[in-house]
Image (tube, rainbow, N blue to C red; front, side, top):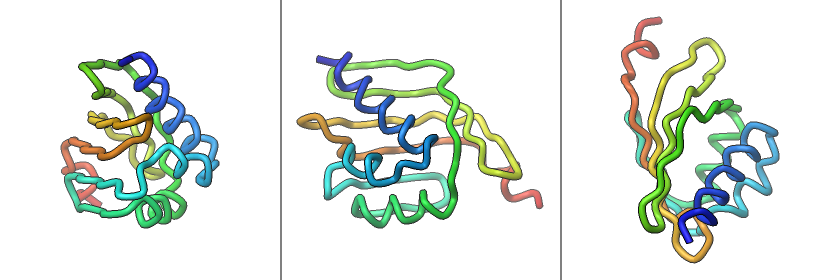
Length: 111
């Protein structure tokens, strides 16, 4: 069960890396919620619109699963800066229901 969920989350990351935003959105529940250090988004299409503008690239360093949850430790290339972060993907019925991302935002605030 958890392996399938890890595959869903990994596929989502791959679609973002490939800039295949339509397929990335197909991995998300329509009522998807994102909670990050610098903000929150409700709704899959709103989140994907943000991702289309930012075009982050992810390098997964480690994956952990517990039940239907998947957690990645990854490097996120945000263009000018690359940060180390953790993302907690809560998956229900094969779709990502919510994502919480934690990282130290100080490198992004030091311009």
